[in-house]
Amino acid sequence: MRLAEAGGGSPKGEKLWATACDLVRALLLGVEEHLPDLRPEIDLREHSRDAPGVEMVSLAVNFGAQAVVGEVATPSRCGFEVRMSGSVRFSLQRPAPSKSSSQPQLTLRVHGLDFDSLLECHAVFKSLEKDLGENGGLSKESAYEWWTQNKDTEYPLESSKFHRMIESLFGQRAIQMMPKQIRIDSFWGFLHNPGCSIQSFTFHADSRSKTTLTARRNPAKSVEEVKLLETCLEVAQTVLKGNRSAGERFAASVTNFAAMLHGPDMGQSGADAAAIVKLCSAARWWGPGPDGWGKFDQTWGCKDKRNAFGIVVEEQGRLLWRLQGQADTVHAAKPRVHKVATSAATVASEVPMRRHGELCCRRRAKQA
Image (cartoon, rainbow, N blue to C red; front, top):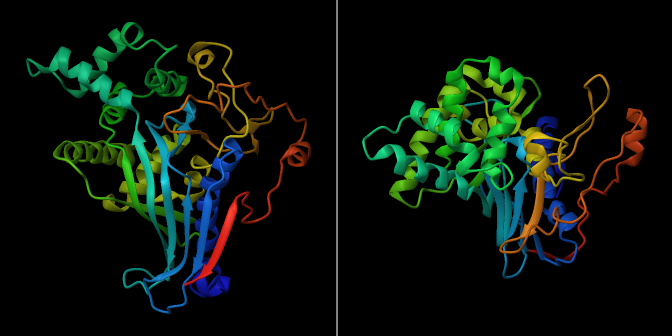
């Protein structure tokens, strides 16, 4: 299958195709990197039917009886984990002419990929309901005040991922200097995280030659989830409309994730596709920090490498993969601490390179 055809016959379309492949490759090669003993079965198929909206190529991966779970590094400030079920499937749809935009777009349908909210998000909210909700006293403001007064006793840093995540954001000096309402709104949003089961990703080429990404959720499964989604949308509107630029600076991963889901609903672009690919990529080094919340968190070191001037000289992913139901076998072992490089050239020489599309697993290619 020719790349130009898959991308809609234009350089921008080819870039969309490449970015979609980057996202799938980041997820699958990340599992291979962290769980080398896992030998998934791969079923790759090209589809010959030539019609808009139908599948061009599909990739089904069977991990076995257990799902694989990617813990998101705490400094990314995302209140969810990434989970691929025992059987996950990706399929690229042949582009259809767009009536609303002259820019090309490409849709990647997904089955078996979920962004599950942290269980502690719900546990903290239940604690708030118990202490504040009986007399109708639960609100954004009272929830934040309860948290500041009870966080250290009810959810100590050494055992609470949720607390460390909040501290990683609110502990920044720049955030502390911003209006208190920003912290109140953000905390309320973390509490109402419904998780996200992905139905499809759509990659867009905007007028600045930048690739953006939007996503469609699978339908809500309960009334409770619908209510969480409504509150989550309200918070996203507040954050994206009023503070998106600041969010992309101080909490790029979670801000872009919100833009991916809600940006177009409020007249904004979707996420920076590169930020979502990085979020879905495996970390290559990690380890605890020297003090504060970081000394209790093995993912503290999941950050990009910067030189003395603060310029990023090497990027890395944000996920640590494990089998669902098992201990955190990847990062509970000896931390991977990246050695300091003296120059960008030295950094580049240390990065292990993979060939495009390389997968260490059994592959069966079939022609549909």
